[in-house]
Amino acid sequence: MIMKNLTSTALRYESGKLLVLDQHLLPHQETWRVCQTVEMMETMIQTLQIRGAPLIGVGAALLVACLVEQGQPHNDILDGVARLRQARPTAVNLMHCMDRMAVALRQQNWQVASITCAEELFEQDQALCAAMASNGAALVKDNDRLLTHCNAGSLATAGVGTAIGVITQAWRIRQGVSVWVDETRPLLQGGRLTAWEMERAGIPYQIICDNMAASLMQAGKVDKVFVGSDRIAANGDFANKVGTYNLAVLAHFHAVPFYVVAPCTTVDANCKSGEHIPIEQRAKAEVTGVRGSFGEVSWSPEKADAFNPAFDVTPASMVTAWVLDSGVYTLNDIQRGILKGTSKNALFTR
Image 1: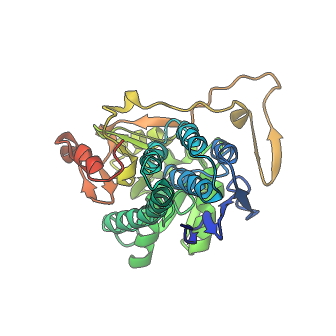
Image 2 (image 1 turned 120 degrees about the horizontal axis):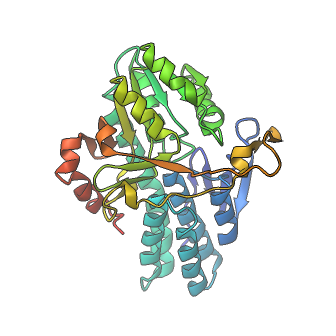
Image 3 (image 1 turned 90 degrees about the horizontal axis):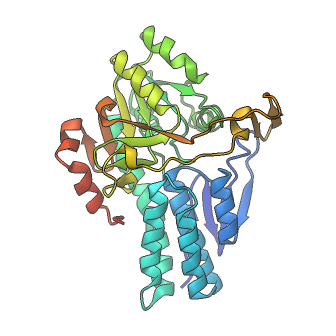
């Protein structure tokens, strides 16, 4: 069996080749790279050439299917799945996708089953994104000024995105919607990637430094906050790009509605609360300087140390509502165990 061609903003599978848009080079260079091995995918994930919890899960699944097509040994492919599963410890979508692929690879007709599974994961993510966009857009009013952090759009999923999918859909059906884009230090995914997506969609936006959000809320210039997530615990606590918790605290103080948007694949029903979510620690060089398509700059003393967690955890008590593909849920819903049920019905249960 040969996998069909699949196309999204940041992933392509064409004629037996997996192509990945190198997000490290955006927004100034749009370079597609061929990914042929587990080692290459692992490096792309860890260097954020491919990023976003849903997208890395789908991308890893397509790579596994590509290896099956190439006729790689069965045990080697299973070992590769186990290795990819650990590539980003916070992103539960990656684990879900690799678990699905591992089940397929253990079927009697494992070649057909694994290729079919990868196709289903790709198409299901697109469908989940469309459902989230529709559910979340209903929360937006005409002339709303929306604030988002990091990048949770078509560069982070196989579909239209999570938080940015909501924003894009709202902009299409509402008048006067505009967006404040957090630059998102230290890697500037907002200023580089979300801004790139806003440009492509034609959505009015302005980039702000992360520490400007407080003054904007104080001045009454933020109507709602929409963010994505890399893992949602059973009690509603969630991990997202570091700096998200800051926004939640500010939004809570200024009575600004704060929404987390994620697919059912981001729900980890086995994780009781945010304190159990593993937080990836990244290289100090990302804090002491910056690099990208524009080059590399270091602004700190040569021997400077730095603390660089990739994510922080926002407690459920600070979330106005959780926007999932299956609906919009309040804290009361979460406390009644709705997330556990959502995860179990998702076909992605670990």
